[in-house]
Structures are given as structure tokens and as C-alpha cells.
Length: 255
Image (cartoon, rainbow, N blue to C red; front, side):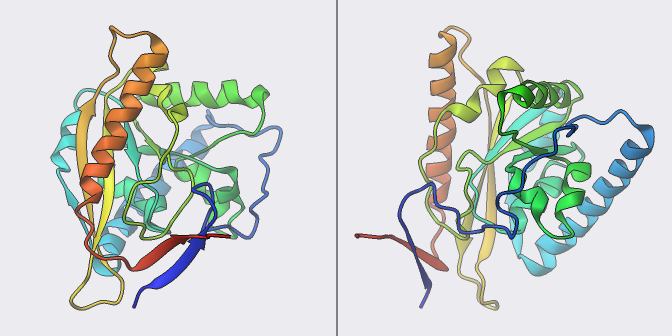
């Protein structure tokens, strides 16, 4: 029998960190120019890729379908990768193996940087925490554009909140889809799905990749953003139907 979790709204987070209210320091840097920092950032990236490959195969039992799409995308420059948010540890590290040899930069909540031990290393690995004020939002947005121009991958979880092993797609707004219009690059979709394993308690994970998608240049900016959001969400919903096992069952509270 699967575990049951109750929720009040789709904005509820089932993976709150110990330092959930962590705030970015006023002098936080999204782009580092120090060569020593960038050297160790590269070393950390390589280590995470290797460790993630081991984790995906030996511990998480994860299969990636259509990875050739992202290998081909690498030849043409940077790209965006939108994914559902359903794997506690995997959503932090899996993009490194999935997008290899492209370096992923993952847009995330600042609370992730408050995770004991691991949190402080996330920015060096590739985390791009969202600021909570307009003053820093410009720097954050420019950092996204710079990483795209450097032919990297920007990873976005539009559902925002983590629901482990959730088998459907939660509704999300078009807010996260302004980046492909401001800094044009192809859009790809990664959808994690779950099936019962014959040998392990936790489900087997299959990640489907789809794309590329592009904003419609013939539409006004807002309409193009909405259309891109629609295409990505419908693609996720179609792929999510491959899930056949509810390891955790989510039910809405009635009172």
C-alpha cells in the first residue's frame, strides 16, 4: 500500500529544508570572474557528473529516453530544459548527467543554499537562486542570459515545489517562460515517470526528453509566452501518462 500525503494547494512543498527561510546575502554573486573559483567550479562539475551517473544507474534505477536530442542541441548552442519536480535528490543532480557535456545551471529557491553541508556548494556546481527583491532580479536575469550565451543549459522546474514521486503534472504559470523570449534559445522538456520495480521498494524512474520548442515570433510577446507554456505543459502531461505506479498517493484535504 502506498504512502498517503495530504495537501491544501499545489503551492505546498513536501521537501522543506532545515533553513527554509534562508536569504541570499546582499553581496551575492550569480557570476564569478575569479579564475580560481571557476577552476574549482569545473572540477566540482566533473565530480558531480561522475557521481550522478553512478547514482542514476546503481541507486535510483533511472533510464533516460531520447537523450540524443540534447546531444544534438549542444552543437547549436545553449538551451532551456523544463522539468516536472518529483525527485528529492535526483532533481538536484540528474541534470548534470542528462545534459552532459553541456553544463547545466539550475534555477532554484534560495532555501536550497541553506541545506546543511551541501547547500554552500550548490552555487559553485551550477545553482542559480532566485532573489527576493527587484534590486537583484536584474543581476539574476542577466546571469541567465550570460549562461545561455556561453552555450550552457538553463534548467527550470516550473512547478516550483517538490512533490516526491507525484505521477501527474501540477498546474503552473507562464512566469518561468519569459527567459526563452528575452534570451532566445531552444526549449526542451524532461518528464520523470514511475513504474513499479520488480526488485526494489522504490519505483523505477524513466525520464523522457522532448523538443525542441520555440516561441512563436509572429505573436505578441505575452501571447508567445503563453503558447510556449501551453506546449511544454501539454508535453509533460502526455509523458506523465507513462507513470503506472503511485509510490506516494497525494490527496487534497477536504476541510
